[in-house]
Length: 232
Image 1 (cartoon, rainbow, N blue to C red):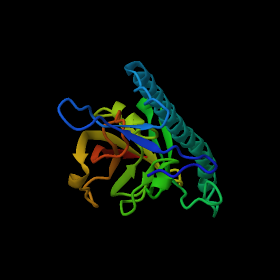
Image 2: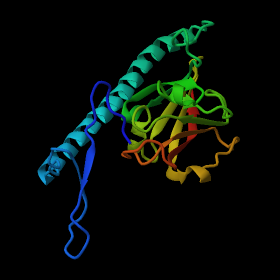
Image 3: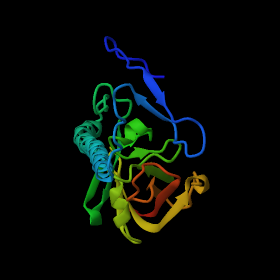
Image 4: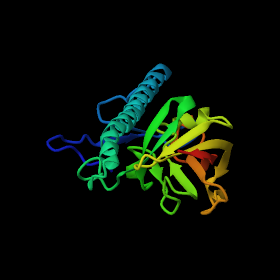
């Protein structure tokens, strides 16, 4: 039962029915002195549905635009923090309240990509840039380096990578390691197992898949694996 709004008297409902028996009509419930409201037409329902879809679409676009703007602004701020990190300043945080800091620089020359990589891979960190997975080898060192980022912002370029493409990972010291892409695969998150140690220095990039999914998240991952070519 719905409560009446303050100051507005509810009109009592009245039950109307014909006497029981053959040919009796169905029971109807109406407000006293009023006719039942006409049922909305099919055209009205379609217009209302279209309006709701339009509102939902605008909301999704606004949310997507905000995420994209945040990602772009984050890289600009991180660029300044990266410069400080290269100068070996003690405070490498991109902004005073940040719980992360620039850890490396990732480039994909063929795709025109140049990104600042952050320490850690929490959801808050990935909103600003690619994150380094804790437990994997630090950028600039031998071993297995694992980076992750969102499919619709910083790692959108992964869908354009091809076998043999070059990836460059730079440490704050300026040391660069060149990697050559050797595999592009999709894996269910439950089946995604990455070795901690590898025979050759390895770089793995991970993002959600498929790239054009309407709903974020999901159990599938797109995995790019590259092996070291040369170090400079």
